[in-house]
Structure formats: C-alpha cells, structure tokens
Image (cartoon, rainbow, N blue to C red; front, side, top):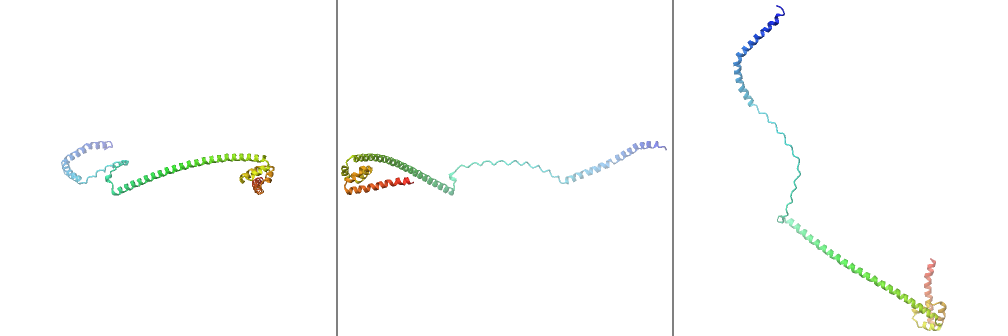
Length: 225
C-alpha cells in the first residue's frame, strides 16, 4: 500500500467512531439520569447542613464632630430654695454692707466738718494778716510823724538860747531828751549841756555816748567786712 492511501483511510474511520460513541451514550442515559436524581438531594442536604457564611459587618457610621456644649440657662433666683447657710451668708453680707454705708456717711460728715474748719481757719488767718498790715501801716505812719515831730523839736532847740534850752531839757522825759539831744549838732548841744543841771547833764552825756557808740559799732563792723 502506498503512502497516499493511509490518510484517506483514517479520515473514513472518524464517522464510525462518532456513531459508536453516540450509541453508547444513548444506552447510558437512563443510568445517568438515575444517578443525578440520587445525587441532587444529597448535595442539597449537605449544602443546607453547612453553616451559613457570616454576613459582612456593616461599615461603622462616621463619628460626628463634637458639637459645642449648649449654654446652660441661669436658673431664676428663688428665695424659698435657699439653705440656712446661704441665708446666714446673705444676712451677714447685708449687715456688712449697712456697716460700710454707715462708715462712709461718717467719713463724709468728718470731711465736711474738716473742710468747714479749714475754711474758718483760712478766713481767720486772712483777717489776722489784714490786721497786721493795718498795724504795720499805722506804725509806719506814726513813726514818720514821730520822726517829723522830733526833727521839728531839734530845729527849735538848736535855734534857742543855750540857757533856755537847758531849762527845758532839765524837765523833759529822758527818752524824749535822748532822741532830741542825740539829733542835735555837737556845736549846738555843748552849750546847752553846760547850762543844764549837773546831774541831768551827766546822765544825758553818758546816754548820748552809749548811743553814739552803739550806732558806730554796726558801721565799723560793716566797713571791716
């Protein structure tokens, strides 16, 4: 047999094999049906006996952001709900407040009295200063008048005769005599002293010397400095 004849023979056998297989399958179909009928209830029973798979856990709910706490309303004041301790505290506070108010009123009254006293003192000081000013003005005016009067007397005694002036000097008050004689020129007072009573002339001479010494001492001290 040649090589070209072998393939043609194999191809012709394929329909025969297929037909045989179909015939065998047709013969076995009843047996396969019975086996499937027996197997299905057993398989269903085994599947029912298996524990059910746990259901997936639900996803956790998102946690909401913390909300700001709501403001607690202030309860209304109810005096009937006060405890004895709270009542004592309130009474003590009221008593302390009354004491402070009384003390404040006393301080205000004292301040008012002090202000009035200071006003009276200031007024009195002003009156005293005014009186001192008037007194100083009167003294200055009187001093000026006294100086003018003494100056007139000095001029009168210097123009008088020494004997006449001596008779008057013997009777004058010693303070006035010293003021007048102390202001007279030495050429004018010398003959008057000679005509005066010796005791009076001696006392006047000593007083004039002391006065002129006391007047020259400050002048000498000022010139020495």
